[in-house]
Length: 136
Length: 292
Image (cartoon, rainbow over all chains, first blue to last red; front, side, top):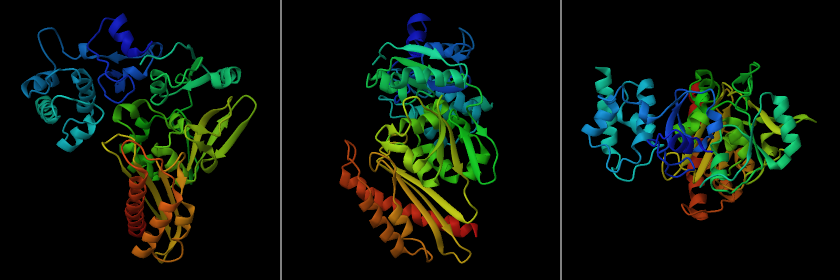
C-alpha cells in the first residue's frame, strides 16, 4: 500500500492529496524525518519507525493557522486548493532551512510542485510574506 | 495508478539482501530511494514479485574509505546529502552543477546515487556524469564482488551490466584535478523535467594553458550516456580556440543518436547537443584557465 493511500484511507488524514502517483506533481508531499518527500512513491511499511508530518499537523491548534497558511490566505495563494497541502509542507521545510530567501530561491524550491490554477505568483508572494512574518 | 501486488521484504543486512536477490533474481527488485522504481510500479510497467527494501542497511550510504584522488560513495547515498556536503562540491564541481537539474528537491530527498545509476534512464544526468568522470561501480552478489567501469556499465535503455543476482553497492569517482575545469549544462522544458539534452565536459590544461585532456559525455542523446571520445580527443594539443570547439561540437553531433520524443525532435536534440557542447567546453576551459 502506498504511503499516500495509507494516510488518506487508513489514518483518515485526507489533507494529503493524490495527483499523479508518479512523483511529478507534488500534491502528495509530506514531511518525512524532516525532509519533504513524495508520499505516493513510498510504501506504508517503509514508514515504520519514522516521523511523518502531514498538513493536518501544520496549524498549532484549532484556533490558529500556521503563518504559511495565513499568508496563503492573505495573498490568494490558492483557488481549488488541490496543490496547496503539498506546497505548504514543501515550503514549511524550505523556510525552516532558508529563513530569508529571495524570490528566485523560492521559485526554485517550488519547482517540484505543480499548480494549475494560480500561475504561482501569489504562492511566491505568500511564501515571501510568511518568511517576513516568521522573521518577526 | 496503483502498484500491482508484491511481496515486501525489509533486508536487515547486506548478506540477507544478496541472498534474497540470489533467490529471486530478476523477479526481485531492490527498493532504495524508489523515486524511479515506484513510478514504474504505479504505472504497472514493471511487476516484480518481490521488493527488497535496502533502506534499513547501515553503512551503505555516505563516503566509504578515504583516498586522496578518489571518493567512494555508498549506493544508498541520497542526493540530499550530496547537496549538503561542502566537500562533495569541492571535489566534484560537475556534480554540484548538475544537482539542481536532477528531478526536484523532494525527489532528491529520497533518491540515491546507486538507485539512479542502476535504473539507467537514458535521460538521467548522473550516468552521463559518471561516464565523463571515468568512475566505476561495485557490483556484489553472493558469488562475486567486482568493479565495473562506467563505460561498460550502461548497456542499453534501463539496462545495466548487473547480473540478476547482483546489487550495486558503491560508486567510485576520481576527484577533480587542480589543473582542470568542468561544466554541466542541460536544456529541459521546465526545471526538473527530463533533459532534452545534457552535456558534461571536463577540460584539463597543462602549465602553458594548452589542452592536455578532455572528456565529453551526454545524456538523452541515445539509449545510454554517450561518451564523445573522438570529439574530446580532437581538442588535445593546443589552447582551445573557438574553431576547435566548433569542430568538437560537430563531432559530438555525429556521435550521438537521439531518439526524439514528444518534447523535441531528434534534429532539435542534435542541434541542442551542438550548442550546449560549445558553451560547456568554453566554460570548462575558462574555469581551468582561471584555476591556473
